[in-house]
Image (cartoon, rainbow, N blue to C red; front, side, top):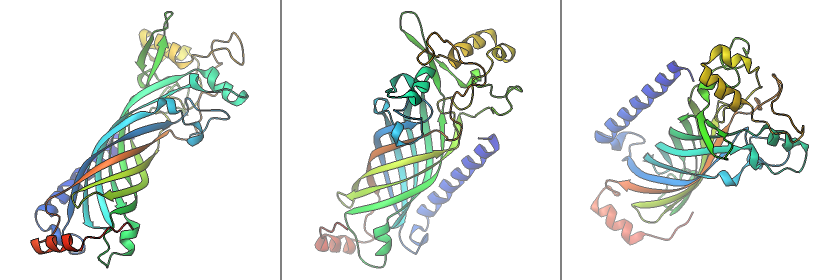
Length: 331
């Protein structure tokens, strides 16, 4: 993502937060539809899954659920702040951190398609830090928005815009079997930015994504709620795992990198093992290394705990009325 886009997103997000705070402190009741704005804060945790070029299962490699490697399931943790101008819509600001990983060595082989990827023998890992601004919509509440419909269980869908930071590492295994991990982006393993490979563009470690998904929210009380949520991230980079296009002529590493980095790039760019072609140690230059057609992505399945802030009811009378008329509605 270009620096100017970065600055635009960050500045607009900060401006939006300032506006929201000012509205909440002054005339929150009149912000949207003339009602009092409610605020909710909380945290979430749950498994995260990577879908990209590395790893996968039997058959041709894809970036969908077929190639999910459960052994690389990681934990995502995060916090969120949500504003509810109405009970059917919310605006959520969230921050999360997780860890992603992929490895060709785990592929189960039943045919020739996956043997090509297993022979490639590449791996990666990376931390991921993300922030997002999303809109939540509760369909059942929207349909009943002119009534006193207040069920405890509420399905919702959501979507928004996010920014995430990653920094892939690849490993080199020594003679004793110990792995050492190295940052991959500076090594330009696929010739990023080299004039010999105009199709291979440098990539930024901070990118935009589009989070979308949905979940079920349950109000244990007027103050406390829990949710189960599935959230998918559409990204615009194929380099979360640093694999996308083709192998290059390794002699070019010496032209554009320091001697130390060139030696690392030579080892990390091609770690082929002779499965289909016994005895091979490297692929010829211009051989396919990754699949450029599909961007890398990741998704999460999380549990969320939310706590409503401030007064739940507009008056003591409304509080007493709610206690007297509470019913076990579901939806």
